[in-house]
Amino acid sequence: MKINSSVALTLILLTLMFGAGFVCAAYGFTLGKEALKGITQPDVRPTNNLASRQGSVLRREEVVILREEDILRRVKAQIGSSTDTTDGDEKPSPSKLTPDEDTKTPASPKSSAVQAGLPIITQDRGVTLEVRSVSQQGGSLMLTVNLRNDGDRPVRFLYSFLNVTDDRGRTLSATTEGLPGDLPPRSQPYAGTVSIPAALLDDASKLSLTLTDFPDQQLQLKMSGIPVVK
Image (cartoon, rainbow, N blue to C red; front, top):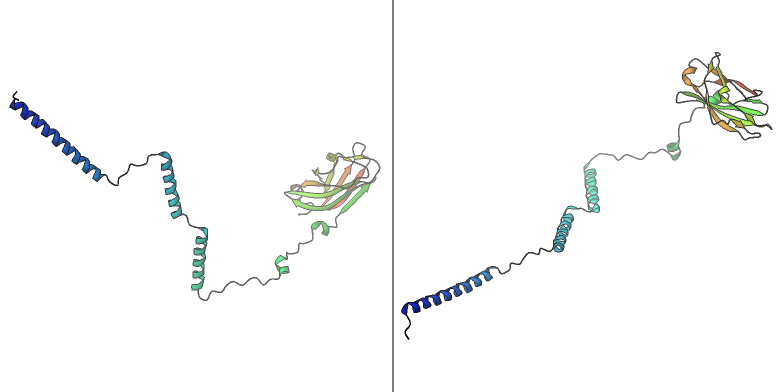
């Protein structure tokens, strides 16, 4: 049986083509493998990326942050060098004042209340009213007073009946604070204040004060000669 020459030639060509293709593929695979040596696939796992980021941040912080001891040491060195280079400068000597002189405060002048002969005391039916001091505070004349009941009966006061006049006979408005409305018998002294607007006292030098009980008005506590402090 004879084989057609064209068919044989075709088979030979196909065989050569497949052989050449196989050889080229093997040669290309070998070249690619040699070229990719030392190259690895990047790690795309989230945990590893986070760890690498933290590591880079820590490295940056280690580079930027300085220790406090190093900073203080450098500052002290600079200060020492600047003081060494100054010639003829004398260090300030410590104060030679004695401890008593350091803590000594100027003697305060005697209060106007003591100079005016205060306290002033008035008493009626076992009830005692005492003006202990006079001072100017916040645009008002402040009278510091004590009120005490040594009697056997309670006494009631309505301080709107408190009458204050100056040495020119003018009646002045006054407000009280801290004084009880009901004064029990045999009581301890109650401290309070009587406040008078200083604007009403421009040309006044002395004050008089009258206080009576309520509602009987049998008790009369009167005093005069209270100094006006300016």
